[in-house]
Each structure stands twice: as structure tokens, then as C-alpha cells.
Length: 544
Image (cartoon, rainbow, N blue to C red; front, top):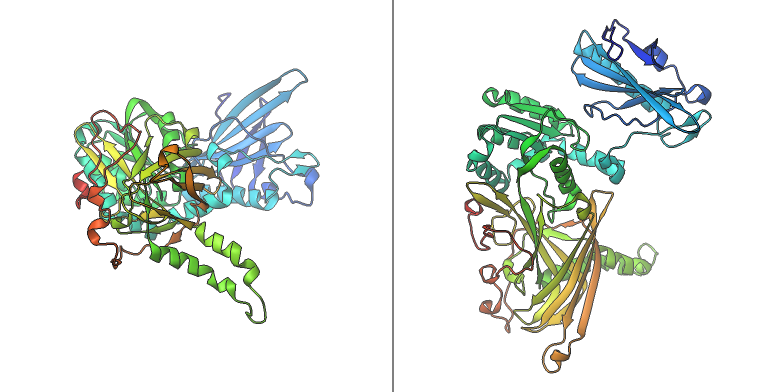
């Protein structure tokens, strides 16, 4: 037998041969593995972290006896591998020895039963004990970069959500989104023909199929949720393309691929571009899998911002807290909670589609270049704000939207979520100030949008807006009024109505309002050589 890999065949009940120390073998059956109980901590195996990278994320079980760490990974439907790490520690240095065996099952059902038994043992014996001190040591779990920065409850809910077909259908039926991706790939066929493609967060596998249609040599569709199984079925149902697509179930932070990619394709955009923090996974995939000077679809993204005036929205949000102004609610005075409730409603960003005529100044934007940005740079995003009011009105907050560029060799195509453009499932986002500001036409509005990532896969937003002095004495500078708010991008108010017709006040005629087509893009950021920004008034985003 090889000193490193030991093939063995299972017989019911399955037995796993584990290499302990360097050459000795022991046999452990499923009943034996399940015989441990939490009442006998002195016999509990100790879990430890291994430096080995698992081939997949299907199974991640650690069993340690004395100084030996056992890891079980699923290689295929009927094949698994067990890796051992034997550490002999002295006062001066530590030496580690790794060994492994493959396990081949007769049927896929046997393989599933075996791995289910291990999972059952892990849940029953270990349970929630990770990190606890036991009589014979500590329980530790192996954590990837994703696991270290994202709380488990948020990740579980996230992957559960995207593992359901109804949510995939919602995205697929966003024809602006899906049509733009399809056009960006097919029209840039020259970038895909004969190339290796990695689809990051493949979902249903639709982008992988587009890449195969464009002539990709091979596509690796990486998907961590249960949607990976549906993707396999969908791809298998398109046999002319299926032979060039491999679905890899796991997180991009953890999976291993047999070759580097010439192109990354992904749909990592969330609300306000950065929500759900998938952009970080997109960047990690770039660093792990993309060849030097490889292409990324999309290539860059921009967050657009402009102050807005919307009295209807402000009153709607403020009135939600009126419930807490009751002095006799079944004999209880609710007013002590009115203040926190009022601030709580204004801490929710509003997600809906709004009329672009509500904007009171030309928009600016902040650029994120996916090809060069570091993952850590997405942990905290700081955007200075500067606008010149086009009309005199009351400013109720900051309106935001985003667009992304597919910088293909043949065609440059934009996907925009701008107000006035065809509505997407992202809509737009507005941060409403609890204390609006009054501005005059020509008055400067300054401020800052500061976003800090948190472990619930989103951002805490800190918005400050100030109106500088206007008129006589303005040249001396100074701030006339300031308003600020703190919002949680994770907890938006999904208003999601279509743009409403607003009645004009007597002192504000329609021609005085700012129209989308009158809003030039202003920013200190450089779009890049040869890149043309999208038109703001186009009704056909697929032609950008």
C-alpha cells in the first residue's frame, strides 16, 4: 500500500480506516462514532483546526484523538477522502505529519448515509460546544475567510434565500438585468471563445450558459447554496453546452479549481451596489483564480448620489412613529418610546423607484474598480459630497443608485439602475434626513457618506449633509445648517412603488424642476481611458 493514499472498499455498515500516527491503522464504524455522548467529556475527541484546504465545501468534519486531527471531505458521489494531521509538539518546535486515505462506496446512498452519520455525530456530540473548554482540551472549528467576517446566522439565511427557485426567478425576470448580461457576453464573443471562465456565485447557472454560448472553452460555475443542484439540472438539460460547464458547490473563498480563469463573470451587486458584501467574494475570486490581466464582467461599478426633495415621503416616514404618541393605549402611556421609534424609522433606507424630477442638484458618483480594488478597501467606504442646488426647496435627504460597466473588447455595455431608466429589481435607494434642510438655488450642499461593513453582510451608513452660507457674506465661508443620520443598509424600508405623479405647487412650475436629462455626471473620479459613461435619459439600457 502507498504510504500516503490507502484505497479501501466499504461494506455495510461502512467502516472508515483512519491512519493514526505514521503507520498504524485503526477502524471506526458509524455506531462507534455515534457512541460518544456529551456526558462523557473525558472520552470526547478534541476538534482542532487543520491547515489543509478542503477540496469542496460539501462536508467539513473534524475528529481528533490525542494529537491526531481527522478531516472528512466528499470528492464525488461515491468517493470521499479522510486526511489526518499528526502533531508532535515539543517545547522548542512542532512537527506535523499529514496522511490520507480514499473511501470508495458501492452506491451513492451509502455515501450519503455515511456522511449523514458524521454530521449527526457532529451535531449531537459537539453541538454548540465550539470554543468551549473540555476536560481533555478545547473544541475549535476550521473557519474560512468568509466565516471569520460573516456571522453564521446571516450566512445561513443568505444561502437559504438564494437556494430557492422563486428568488432566482425574480432575478431572471428582471429583463434589464438578464438582457444586459446576455448582450454583454454575446456581443463580446471574442473575449470568451476558447477561454476558461469562472462564474462567481453562479445561482441558477444562467451566466455560465451565456458564457458557453459565447464559445468558452470551459466554465466553472461556483455556487455555495443548494441552488448548485438546480444549476446542475438546468445545465444538464442543455446538453450542447453542458459538456463545457462544471458546477462546483462551495464558497469561492474555499473551493479549489484545476486551472486559472481568463475571465470572471458574476452578478455580485446588491442594493446600493455593496449590500450583501458579495463584491468582496468577487474580488477574492479575482485574486485566487484570475490570470494576470484577465477580464472581469462586470469590470467596474459606480454609486451615484444626489440630494432630493420629497415632502410626501418625509411625511410618510415621520407618521409611522405617531403610534407611539398615544397617552392611553389600553391604559399605557406609549410616549416615552416615541423618540426612539421616530429615529428608528429614519434609520431605514427607503428602497423604491422615484421620479428623477425630485432631484435638486446634478449627481456625483463614486467609482469602484473591480479589477484593482483590494478586498479590505470594501470594509469601509468614505465618499465626500458636494452639490450645487439647482432649485430653492427643502432637501429631505440623499438619493442613490448605481451602474456597472462590462468593458468588453468589442462592446462596452452599461447596466444602470438610475431613476428614469427602466426599473430593475434593485430599484433606487434614498436616505431620508429626520431634519430636512432649506436651500436656495445656487447654494452649495456639502457632506459625507461613510459606510462601514458589518458581519450581517451589509453596511452601517453615516450620512451628513450641510448647506453652506449663500448670498451676502457667503465668500467668508461657514456652515449655515447641518443634518445627519445613521442608517442600516441591512434593514431597508421596501417601498418599491413605481414613480408617482407629483402635483406642482403654485410657486414651483414644472420647468423649474431638475430633469434627469439635465443632470450631467460630475465627479473627481476618473472613469478610465476610452470608457463612455451611460446616458441618463436613455430608455433602452441594453444599447449602452
